Amino acid sequence: MSSETIEQYKVELCLGVENLSAEIATHQAKITLLELEHGRASLLLQMLGRWFTFGPAEELDWVRFKLRLSQRELAQCKAQLEILAITISPLDLTPEFVKLLSSHSLPVSN
Image (cartoon, rainbow, N blue to C red; front, side, top):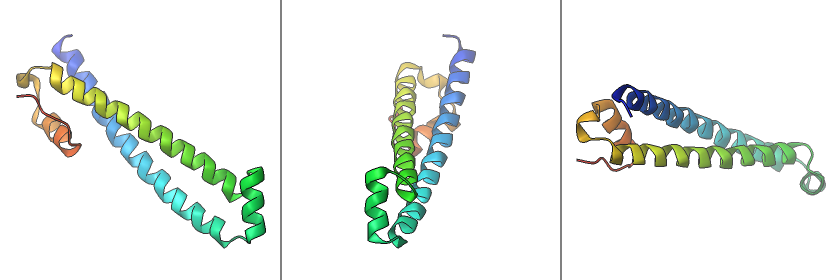
């Protein structure tokens, strides 16, 4: 791989980590709001919503699914960053990349 390709890959991974982290925070906030909305409904509506998946229960299930998917994608991005950090030479590590790795508790090869 050329150094330009590696740099582009690092940039894409860093953007992916940032975007997925923001997406996960959004999903978690939405889940909190939906749980409050779902909790205000009568018990009968709550049970029917869970059984037949309608109303807030349906949306809650969908947001939880998207949250799990985003968390898996974030884990894959972090794993790719870790592999990249291990495989590239220490001279290719820019200060921004080292800072990103350390902020996500990833090892930095020396």
